[in-house]
Image (cartoon, rainbow, N blue to C red; front, side):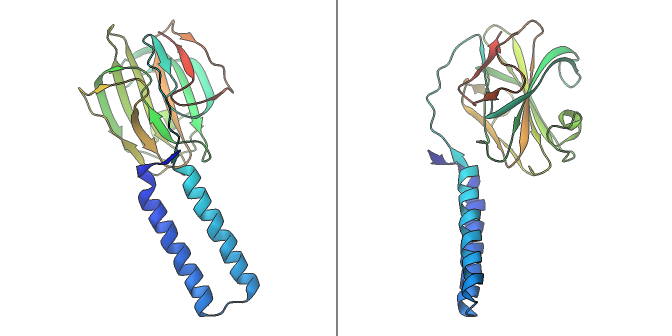
Length: 217
């Protein structure tokens, strides 16, 4: 288990706040009950930050023809829908909601070349809102595999997620299971797959990024 690099600043700020709060309590000789409340809150805050930015070490097995889960969380959408940003046609959408207790590392679902990338500023609706996929702050990534099949996936900010981080750009070669980004706090990842794609998960399933197979192309 590692601590993700995106959490360094948050951890430093948390430690500073804890030190200041405890120093003030000691300096003014706060009553014992107040000190214990501060100690407990400090421990809770520290543990929350550490668990949120944890980054488990995973042995990724690259499997051509499969779609690897891009994030930890729960499957909340499996439906045919219109994709109007890049494909402009009907696609099969699979959406994964990440709660604040999930690992928030985002991984490439397939290997290939990044044929499209765009960042969209936007709103911060709750991640499960139907319009979050089109109205919220988000990134759109399209990867084309060796067979010319393209898969589109989006990082979508939620009501708490106020920072999306990405590590890819157009024409990059990416490997299935490698990190393509990180979203801070509750958020969502959408996949848009060709119609006819075999889907191996169901709505409500808990999935693991880099481990669960979403389906087969």
